Length: 188
Image (tube, rainbow, N blue to C red):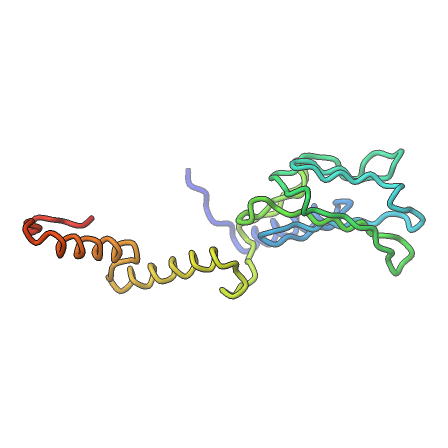
Protein backbone atom coordinates (compact mmCIF):
# COMPACT_ATOMS: atom_id res chain seq x y z
CA UNK A 1 0.00 0.00 0.00
CA UNK A 2 1.58 3.26 -1.11
CA UNK A 3 1.86 6.20 1.29
CA UNK A 4 -0.49 8.99 0.33
CA UNK A 5 0.49 12.62 0.55
CA UNK A 6 -0.83 14.29 3.72
CA UNK A 7 -3.49 16.96 3.29
CA UNK A 8 -2.51 20.55 4.16
CA UNK A 9 -4.43 20.19 7.45
CA UNK A 10 -2.60 16.93 8.29
CA UNK A 11 0.71 18.55 7.34
CA UNK A 12 -0.03 21.53 9.62
CA UNK A 13 -0.97 19.17 12.48
CA UNK A 14 2.30 17.23 12.01
CA UNK A 15 4.28 20.50 12.03
CA UNK A 16 2.48 21.68 15.19
CA UNK A 17 3.16 18.34 16.94
CA UNK A 18 6.82 18.47 15.87
CA UNK A 19 7.16 22.08 17.14
CA UNK A 20 5.50 21.14 20.44
CA UNK A 21 7.87 18.17 20.92
CA UNK A 22 10.90 20.35 20.15
CA UNK A 23 9.71 23.11 22.52
CA UNK A 24 9.40 20.54 25.34
CA UNK A 25 13.10 19.65 25.08
CA UNK A 26 15.38 21.13 27.79
CA UNK A 27 17.53 22.60 25.00
CA UNK A 28 17.19 24.43 21.69
CA UNK A 29 19.09 23.37 18.60
CA UNK A 30 19.77 24.48 15.06
CA UNK A 31 21.83 23.03 12.26
CA UNK A 32 23.39 23.70 8.92
CA UNK A 33 24.46 20.93 6.57
CA UNK A 34 27.96 21.07 8.14
CA UNK A 35 27.35 21.59 11.87
CA UNK A 36 24.84 21.57 14.69
CA UNK A 37 24.45 24.01 17.59
CA UNK A 38 22.75 23.25 20.91
CA UNK A 39 22.01 25.76 23.66
CA UNK A 40 20.50 25.35 27.11
CA UNK A 41 20.00 27.61 30.09
CA UNK A 42 21.50 26.91 33.50
CA UNK A 43 21.48 28.94 36.75
CA UNK A 44 23.57 32.12 36.59
CA UNK A 45 25.72 31.25 39.61
CA UNK A 46 27.36 28.28 37.85
CA UNK A 47 30.90 28.31 36.49
CA UNK A 48 32.45 26.02 33.88
CA UNK A 49 33.94 23.81 36.60
CA UNK A 50 30.39 23.13 37.91
CA UNK A 51 29.39 21.53 34.62
CA UNK A 52 29.91 18.21 32.89
CA UNK A 53 30.14 18.53 29.12
CA UNK A 54 31.37 15.49 27.18
CA UNK A 55 31.63 15.77 23.40
CA UNK A 56 32.48 12.32 22.10
CA UNK A 57 32.49 11.02 18.53
CA UNK A 58 28.99 9.48 18.93
CA UNK A 59 27.86 10.64 22.39
CA UNK A 60 26.83 13.88 24.09
CA UNK A 61 26.55 14.40 27.86
CA UNK A 62 25.68 17.81 29.34
CA UNK A 63 24.76 18.51 32.94
CA UNK A 64 25.51 20.05 36.30
CA UNK A 65 27.88 18.09 38.53
CA UNK A 66 26.04 16.08 41.17
CA UNK A 67 22.75 16.08 39.21
CA UNK A 68 21.18 13.89 36.52
CA UNK A 69 22.53 14.99 33.10
CA UNK A 70 20.27 17.35 31.15
CA UNK A 71 21.37 15.71 27.90
CA UNK A 72 22.78 12.19 27.88
CA UNK A 73 22.64 10.08 24.77
CA UNK A 74 24.13 8.74 21.60
CA UNK A 75 24.45 11.09 18.65
CA UNK A 76 22.71 9.85 15.49
CA UNK A 77 25.88 10.52 13.48
CA UNK A 78 29.57 11.06 14.22
CA UNK A 79 31.20 14.41 15.00
CA UNK A 80 34.76 15.76 14.83
CA UNK A 81 35.50 16.02 18.56
CA UNK A 82 38.57 18.21 18.03
CA UNK A 83 36.48 20.76 16.06
CA UNK A 84 33.48 20.68 18.43
CA UNK A 85 33.35 23.17 21.32
CA UNK A 86 31.25 24.47 24.19
CA UNK A 87 31.10 27.80 26.01
CA UNK A 88 29.25 29.18 29.04
CA UNK A 89 27.78 32.62 28.34
CA UNK A 90 26.00 34.98 30.79
CA UNK A 91 22.43 35.83 29.70
CA UNK A 92 20.64 39.16 30.14
CA UNK A 93 18.08 37.58 32.49
CA UNK A 94 20.66 36.50 35.11
CA UNK A 95 20.99 32.90 33.91
CA UNK A 96 23.78 31.46 31.80
CA UNK A 97 23.64 29.60 28.51
CA UNK A 98 25.73 26.59 27.57
CA UNK A 99 26.39 26.88 23.82
CA UNK A 100 27.60 23.67 22.19
CA UNK A 101 28.93 23.52 18.65
CA UNK A 102 29.10 20.07 17.03
CA UNK A 103 31.12 19.73 13.82
CA UNK A 104 29.54 17.00 11.67
CA UNK A 105 31.80 14.43 10.02
CA UNK A 106 29.33 13.84 7.18
CA UNK A 107 28.79 17.35 5.83
CA UNK A 108 26.09 16.18 3.41
CA UNK A 109 23.54 14.97 5.95
CA UNK A 110 20.77 16.62 7.98
CA UNK A 111 20.17 15.30 11.50
CA UNK A 112 16.60 14.43 12.53
CA UNK A 113 17.46 14.89 16.23
CA UNK A 114 20.40 15.78 18.48
CA UNK A 115 20.45 12.51 20.39
CA UNK A 116 18.96 9.12 19.55
CA UNK A 117 15.57 8.75 21.23
CA UNK A 118 14.77 12.47 21.24
CA UNK A 119 11.79 13.68 19.18
CA UNK A 120 12.67 13.86 15.49
CA UNK A 121 12.14 16.60 12.95
CA UNK A 122 11.19 15.90 9.34
CA UNK A 123 14.50 16.52 7.55
CA UNK A 124 12.84 16.15 4.13
CA UNK A 125 11.24 19.58 4.71
CA UNK A 126 14.57 21.37 5.29
CA UNK A 127 15.32 23.99 2.68
CA UNK A 128 19.07 24.59 2.69
CA UNK A 129 20.38 28.11 2.40
CA UNK A 130 21.64 29.05 -1.01
CA UNK A 131 25.38 28.92 -1.35
CA UNK A 132 27.66 30.44 -3.92
CA UNK A 133 30.30 28.53 -5.87
CA UNK A 134 32.83 30.98 -4.46
CA UNK A 135 32.05 29.73 -0.93
CA UNK A 136 33.25 26.22 -1.79
CA UNK A 137 36.81 24.93 -1.51
CA UNK A 138 38.68 24.42 -4.80
CA UNK A 139 38.14 20.68 -5.15
CA UNK A 140 34.42 20.80 -4.30
CA UNK A 141 33.89 23.81 -6.55
CA UNK A 142 35.58 22.02 -9.48
CA UNK A 143 33.41 18.96 -8.92
CA UNK A 144 30.19 21.05 -8.79
CA UNK A 145 31.16 23.03 -11.90
CA UNK A 146 31.88 19.78 -13.78
CA UNK A 147 28.50 18.35 -12.72
CA UNK A 148 26.72 21.54 -13.84
CA UNK A 149 28.56 21.50 -17.19
CA UNK A 150 27.77 17.80 -17.74
CA UNK A 151 24.09 18.42 -16.91
CA UNK A 152 23.88 21.27 -19.47
CA UNK A 153 25.63 19.08 -22.07
CA UNK A 154 23.16 16.21 -21.50
CA UNK A 155 20.20 18.59 -21.79
CA UNK A 156 21.54 19.75 -25.19
CA UNK A 157 22.21 16.18 -26.32
CA UNK A 158 25.97 16.78 -26.37
CA UNK A 159 28.69 14.60 -24.82
CA UNK A 160 29.59 15.09 -21.15
CA UNK A 161 33.15 16.02 -20.21
CA UNK A 162 34.05 12.34 -19.63
CA UNK A 163 32.51 11.29 -22.96
CA UNK A 164 34.34 14.12 -24.77
CA UNK A 165 37.61 13.00 -23.16
CA UNK A 166 37.04 9.43 -24.46
CA UNK A 167 36.27 10.73 -27.94
CA UNK A 168 39.46 12.84 -27.91
CA UNK A 169 41.50 9.83 -26.81
CA UNK A 170 40.00 7.73 -29.60
CA UNK A 171 40.72 10.44 -32.19
CA UNK A 172 44.34 10.70 -31.02
CA UNK A 173 44.72 6.92 -31.14
CA UNK A 174 43.29 6.87 -34.70
CA UNK A 175 45.83 9.50 -35.80
CA UNK A 176 48.69 7.50 -34.28
CA UNK A 177 47.50 4.28 -35.96
CA UNK A 178 46.23 5.09 -39.48
CA UNK A 179 46.85 1.46 -40.51
CA UNK A 180 43.98 0.26 -38.25
CA UNK A 181 40.32 0.02 -39.27
CA UNK A 182 38.04 1.88 -36.84
CA UNK A 183 34.82 1.65 -38.88
CA UNK A 184 33.12 -0.75 -36.43
CA UNK A 185 34.07 1.09 -33.19
CA UNK A 186 31.10 2.06 -31.05
CA UNK A 187 31.39 4.41 -28.07
CA UNK A 188 29.26 3.58 -25.04
